[in-house]
Amino acid sequence: MVWLCGVDGFKEKWRAVLGNVATGEVRLMDRPLNEILDLPERPPIITVDVPIGLPEVTLPGGRTSDRLARHLLGARSRSVFSPIGRITMQFQEVAEAIEEAGGLATKLHNIRQASTSYTASAA
Image 1 (tube, helix red, strand yellow):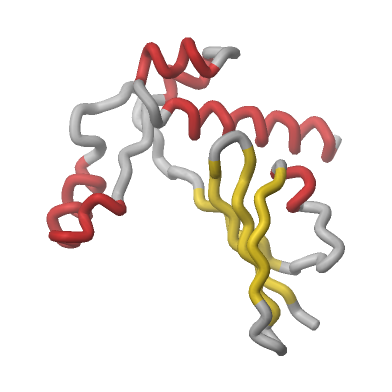
Image 2 (spheres, rainbow, N blue to C red; image 1 turned 180 degrees about the vertical axis):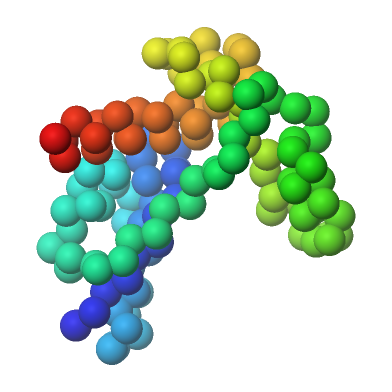
């Protein structure tokens, strides 16, 4: 059976949706990223929703691409969130990052922690 997996940051963990291509079965789970990468279903493809092209600093209204996407989406514009600046990557504690960049700092902080953890475990 072939499983595919999509992952997005969710609170302190990651939310994964597993889909079985053959049967249509869908599973939802919240786990640390290292556990998702080691699932017994062994999905050959795991996609992770992370911001690409982080600005150096957090910009009011986000990047130009964020503003244009919101304009095109109209009523669904709230589904576009702007990533925070790279400046928050320097903070070890999420509280410091939030003070610098606001609530979305939590997501970026968790991404940094997960990538650091995964890089260390892969070495």
